[in-house]
Image (tube, rainbow, N blue to C red; front, side, top):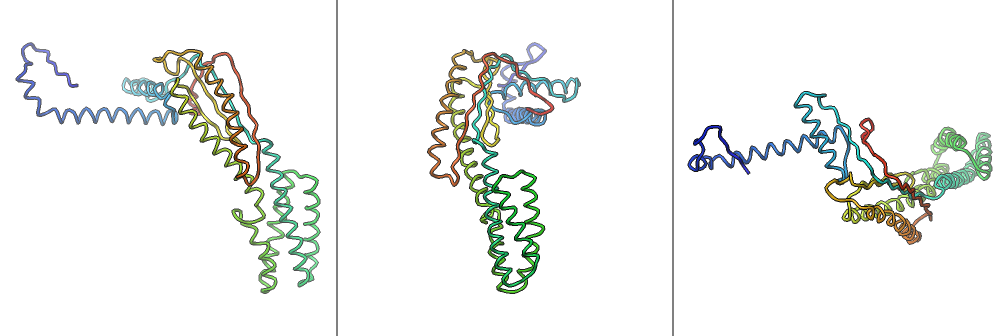
Length: 320
């Protein structure tokens, strides 16, 4: 719509308006350009001052961005971000974690190192048959000592020491023997072909573990994305996921999320019921996936219940 007015009486009539018809396409382009520029500036301020946003709270940040533009126009505080807060929101928290993930990682590492050291002892024995160097006896002794140590458990520091032994002592020595002839080279190649992170046997248990963890987290992430989209149809709420060894999420629901839409506690109760149901669904989903996992893993579930509403504010320093 275009409004035309005049401060002088009798200066505006049908004949005058007819003469403006030719200019209307240009006026429309000018208005559209102004609107596009306005939205671009709003988006720029939101992205610079705040963060990527969810549709349920986008309106609040658009209001704040407009206030930043207005203050800048009035030369008040430049483009300084304005405070953003949501009052009386009900928080909901849930987490699905890989059970004993640290233990699983340590066991996978130990299994890989046991295989590597065991093969190394065999390789050294074969090399010893061709080269009677005393250094090979010492290297074999260290390898067997670390093997015995692994069977009784180990710390991260000890794992680092094993890596240094393999990388700084073993590998350079084997690379030297590889140059001494075809027979020796074939022996060393049995070790070297297992070094590859993506296909080598020395990383097989860790690869299987990470693959299974990724399968679980991807499935959980897809499930929550679909559920969030469906639940948002009932009443808008804030939903954010976090990736750890599993998946965690924060939810906030209340009147201040959408002031134009009346809030009732039944929406809160529906989300709490969904939390319980979703945990059960995820548990069954993971159980069905076990046949496809290279390493079978289990998950633990946590739901945090807070019956009282809280106020939530945006932290400008962290942009969240």
